[in-house]
Image (tube, rainbow, N blue to C red; front, side):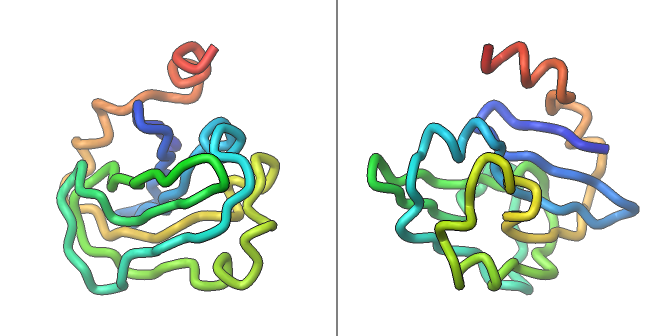
Length: 120
């Protein structure tokens, strides 16, 4: 179940664990990424908490958790080559995985059609 936030994060729930990243649109708007700060595995976060930071040549942007839960894994390999974070590779450039406390939180998020309408 893929969902989007108004802040351009995506979340894909599989079982009770979800993968989180930022949308191709957000990556395109940021431009060249020069620094990424990821959360730590083991941290417990609430929906809406700032959990990561992306800095580009244009701006710095906080990344918010689309759901409450425990961060179980972070994508450290993306830090090895920030130039690989492109709109075309947005799903491969996932940020973290989170064990969801309450999957009903995702019901308030947008599906892909609603997200595309929002950014149009």
